[in-house]
Length: 276
Length: 350
Image 1 (cartoon, each protein chain N blue to C red):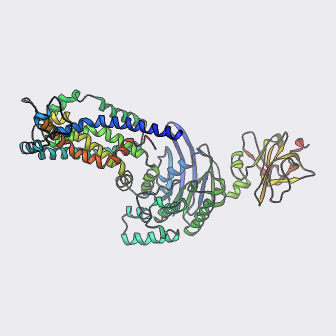
Image 2: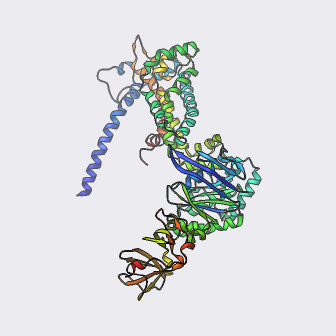
Image 3: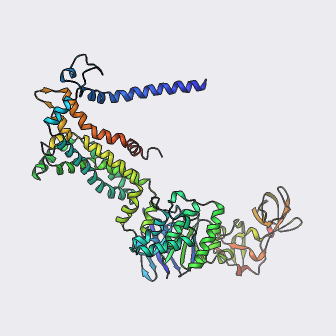
């Protein structure tokens, strides 16, 4: 009796979970499917789900017409560069707040988080002007700097929660053993916090890869990453859904693959501190 | 060399004085135990000596040099933490070698030293293991090994045995005492366990509420506690306190203290008559909790073969020369002053 009830409950939950999962995933699946259709089929009023003439023509056209690999390379440089630069700043900052806190530490953390609540448009003009004056418009360096600044609060918060879980006695032991602050961080803190640092890095690569506000505004051609590449397919002459889908698929593919292989790490990173 | 001198050292947390100005001299080679209840400031004091905690006032001298502002690494002290604080990502070998590597010592010399320390502490078979693969006792030994290998001026132990089970604690206590005999290096040891303090120390420093109550050898503290706090803290089971209102040789006495081992039992006669409550038979000893109406609940340490049990009526008498006297402030009234006077317990006789 009780067992069958449990089983029923399990089935209901499974159905519910799958429904939500498919609902979330469906647009992505539809995009991938559309990328293999012809333009005509893509806009058909009665679209077929799987039974259409599969074609890879869209991909051929896109790779031939545009500079996918140059955009891809820009995305790699910007997301990886900003994540690494961010880590370089965030590790010492999080170390200080986790292990040498003072009365204002909580306020500083809250203030940093509050900057994430600001609509980016609010600082569009000043940033644009600064970029213009410093010749940073349409440069990878410029985007690396902006991405670093945007994601720094999240990086510091994530690392801070990780570091808080590390007993401070271990770092004190290192200090007693003659380690300088630098070697305390490099030889003791970083190796212990490696899983946390890895998931922070991963999440920030994903965030920077997907960022589309600043990348579209601050770049034109030279430094344009994949987000700009997608946007270029919504042209004034009308939308080419199939090609747009193919472009989007190509843009998200790398990050999807990284995400797939590191999902365990990511989930652990995002829920860290929530459950012990 | 490991002389450590504290001069008027104080510590404030948020304007709250947790260590009141205190002076203390620790001689080279001494085994000094800081003992006291939790929150009394003993660990804070140790951390200030280590340099892990800033000093709010006063100076700390190590080997005659002012080290108040010296960073921990430069003080030449080694510390063993309660949680062992081993580096979880390193092998036992790397853990022990860590301080030597930081000192940029030659690799061959490091290996030689690590092997020697591992041998002393019976850690040789575990050198390639990670701390997570060791038992609590072995981890503690690695922590001690990491301290020894540096050949420090002094060792600082912060409640190193609290995380071990009772049997292992006794073993490690002996090992640390043996280590002190072998190395003859200054050791400062923080504990809340008065048994550890009594058995290991050359000198005990009793802390209470940020003050030093008394400094002395274990037996001095046991025989001549300067106040009620020390009298009650040192010795197990605790000293019995009996409220009185007497004047002895012109000095007011508000309290008598008698240790459980200084009470004699009889079934026929004695100073106080009471009823046995719980009787704890330990084999070697028996602890009787005797309720004497109008006096106190007295703990009596008796022979292992003590015949008394729950509900028995017994007479309890203190051994006169071992009775302690305290005034209203808890300060001990020197025994010599009252030595010739008989115990003022007549008023309780029943």
